[in-house]
Amino acid sequence: MNALPVRLTIDQAWDKWHAQKDPLAREWLVVHYASLVKFVAGRLAAGLPKRVEIGDLVSSGVFGLMNAIDRFDPALGFKFETYAIPRIRGAILDSLRSLDWVPRSVRSKARTVENAISDLEHELKRAPTDEELAVKLKINSSDLETWLTEIASSAVGPLDHVVADNTPASTHGGASYVPSPDSVVEASELRKIMRSEIKRLPERERTVLVLYYEENLTLGEIGDVLGVTESRVSQIHTKAVLQLRSRLAAADVA
Image (cartoon, rainbow, N blue to C red; front, top):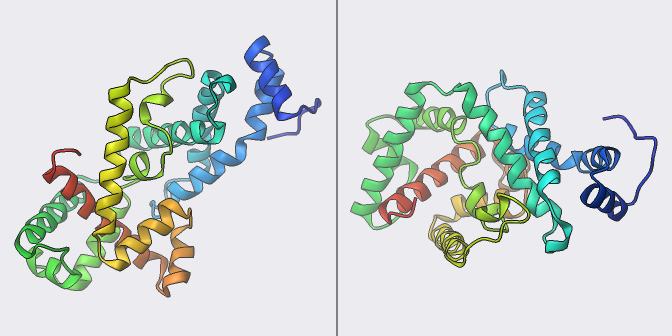
């Protein structure tokens, strides 16, 4: 985005936009917070097929950013970044879903793996290893890695709304909206359950989720930490997500 002719402080921009609906102030805010869009788009782009252009993700995310700016009220005390990131992420995910680029065969594999994990956890009373999961699916370990790689591209942002958001989802509907106590408690409880389940995962899966969702490392950076390839981190992440989804479904909180 091009530099604007008028320089404002962040407080001045918010005051001019919120009180006067000054379009120049709004444009200044969009430019100022554009890095949020690039950050979210970059994280979601990891593991997506090459035909999905990151520029398209950024374009979709800008709409989410503008929506957040239009609805945000600084007087409510929320940090704008916390408020805006779920909206930016949601706009990007909506654009990806509208493309319907995930083949039915991949969706079917995701359901099959998730069901197999659920069955094995019930039988073994613990998380299954990759080898046990492959045997259950009647495929070899190499095929399992291929399946997880394919599924990774269909599991965009599977935990962001629970693990990474710092405010209840219901607070993102509008700056003037006050969430009900029940909705706040429900969102808080879901995050609490999810974090509890993450602690029960095997160390490798748990480490990947913590580094990705809480430390904001990219899959490539996590690979450097663990000494494995980025594609392997993507597979570990996908398996961990499917494990958590199966547990939430079993607990009827998914």
